[in-house]
Length: 532
Image (cartoon, rainbow, N blue to C red):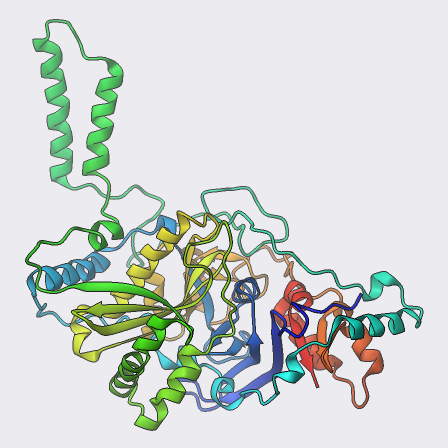
């Protein structure tokens, strides 16, 4: 059955133009002039579930351009990385950054130490890794993207039935994506969802690779002394009461309570949501603003935000003023294909694209561009005021976004991961994302998540790796039936099998096959591939 998405005259929920592969262009990581290889498509619109499924297959967006590195061919393989936000514990260096911000806000103290250069996704090559974002814009009119009325769809459907095709062959059922249990504290596997059902097993890291997550955290000597003191106190109480001993349950409770207070490491929330003194020197406010010119907060702060972007790009990435004007800012960080959605079991702010603005004493000093998706918060980009580099805003904003993910999880139980973009092991300065643990890398062949501890030894030997060690495992979401790919042609939605029969001119099957193999069967049956 031929389908029409949305209400009559409305633009479908997801329409994409596949641009194909781009080979042999400059890499910003290794400085190779012709080493980069990626595939790209222009997304006119996209649901948050579409994009969630795409990033779980190694795709990433820059504005309305959605691109995927061709991992076994590109010079610097870029592995999708996610942090398990619910299990995250800040490291010593992370705590230093959080304490530094607290001291600055409360007392105005400015650290003399050099700031840590760990900007979360502020490397321009990571965010615009394909030139499609600026040179591959679509020139298709809005009317071409709007499906015709129901009458026309039904007429084309009846014509197709007369050809003798079976109903099953041309019937495209809408794929409803369920909400798999993806939190790693549940071991129940989810059929057909390999990228979200991997059981996390931590292997001891090599010396110098960080803490061994399979062992309990180290305890401070003073905490152990406190616990011993409490035990002696309990013993003394039992003696002085002349045989009237405390209840065993009470003793256990006191001991456990002591352990929970003395042995439990501080969380991000302990630093971020601490109450400040009345005479605090500064005021920091974090505002979540939907990326929409219809939103009054976004509209009123646009000029200040755009000016900050230009200041950052020129100071940090040495852009010229023409490279980072308002048009470039809008295309790169304000234009999003994601359709805003609200769900009963979703976060109160809804799903979609947002700017998380950091206001210090009434002015914006940093903006984290994020996408809130069904199972994660995805970091898109960060730009900040270089005058405040001493606050390590890249690290601080990443920690705040992890805390924000945990906050959203309270209302939306399926949302429990923080996606950090790409991890590039072959580029030493891009390895910092691996410090946000526990984290997983996406296998580029089977699209199964693998703990980063198991990936690092493999990456030391080869820059391109298949992380899934089960050599019989395959991509469960691979394309199985090309004829079921959904196509938008002459404002009519149809399966590719129907479009192919009526197509004039040279065959485009190789291009459609390439597109479908990269996006997978589920997305290819749900999104509309525009054909002229």
